[in-house]
Structures are given as structure tokens and as C-alpha cells.
Length: 83
Image 1: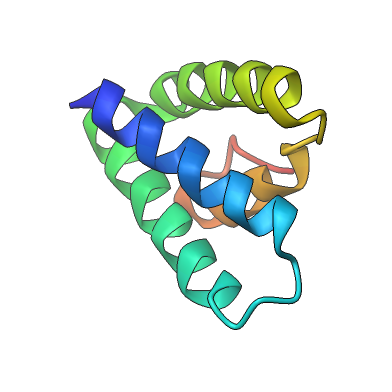
Image 2 (image 1 turned 180 degrees about the vertical axis):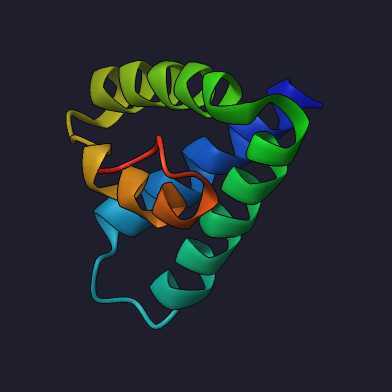
């Protein structure tokens, strides 16, 4: 399941980075937040860290853009996760 979520996250964030003015960005950010909640409930902050590490590396290499700002979409999940 994590692999499927990782691929979905990569698609969502890549779209948002490449199309920042699109009307679809709001919905995609909402889905990114939902995935973060699911990850946190399933494995805590460690699961979120592991997922985002893999996503960050792949997106940075594939499109040359930094996905770090999207980490803030998961801030509500835990007091430990503050970006």
C-alpha cells in the first residue's frame, strides 16, 4: 500500500509544482493532506518522514523542483511534524 501512496503522492506533488496556477491544485493539496493523515495513523511520524524522504529525492531528480513546501500540509497530524 505504501508504494501505491508514494506513487500517488509523486503524481500529486509533481502536478502542483508544474501547474501552480491550475484550478486542480486545491483538490490535489487536499488529497496530499489526507494521505499524510493515513500515514500518521498507520505508522506515526516515522512513516511520514520515510515517505517524504523518498518523494523528495525522486521529484528533485525527475523534475528538478523542490517539494519541501508540501511538508507543511501534514503539520496538523502531529505536534512533532512542524514545517
